[in-house]
Length: 346
Picture 1 (cartoon, rainbow, N blue to C red):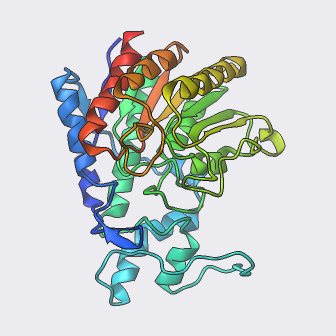
Picture 2 (cartoon, rainbow, N blue to C red):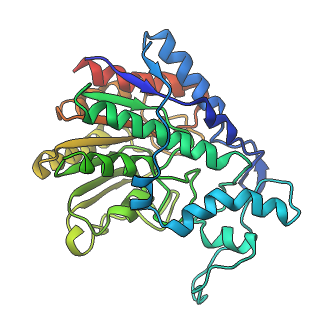
């Protein structure tokens, strides 16, 4: 088995000047150089089939995301500049508890807050183009697999996507690439699709999109929301609603979690995927469970990502792997490519 990688240099158009963290404006944790370290490691380890994706297809994105929200992403920067602002667009106000919040404001600052689920994520001049290119990588990886051309593919997406909700951005995410890939699997004939999110942070956006659906099983292994971003979702009791009841599985774990415990949660996840009878799999690959990640608190070693890849490959499903988080810059390439090698080694 080989692995084709889909990637677009347009990701560099999203390059925020800073990020609010610890009361300061710091260098963003989610920055373009993350991808350079991954590309260097891919080349070193012989992953030579790296392709630019086909053109972005908006149709499946509009199936999952609110049209007003997508229009906001497309026009936000121009609206911001028209107001006379020159810095990155960072919302200063978001709807808080007990505010009626029944109407989206016309002012761009208010509108940005309306569509934000967190304020560490800024919008820049090239954010929308980068988000489309990122999603296009996931779409091309999906087509590569769903056509039968390959059993698996890797979408090296940036910006990431799993925090993007139906109508909200945040957590560095704008378009939910993994959700789009899952929907496209369904549209191409799959009856049931599983999304396995192994990023350290809960995939609140993916949960939001599929929470009332039974054709997509969403499973997330993540830092417990009592202690970790996004704080307000990711509890074990969130199991889906309506037709989706029982098709959402959260496996939160506490500070200091090591691989033995984490791997036990992974075994629970893969067992549930087998029970579900999935026809295809989307993996939200974040490597921020790594022990030295600056904004996470799990204790996985680099070798653990290799074993994780092997275990997930054991599901023997058509698989699209979508890049999400991972902020230990010097090790991100080792950890991502280690997962891919483990996946291919099974």
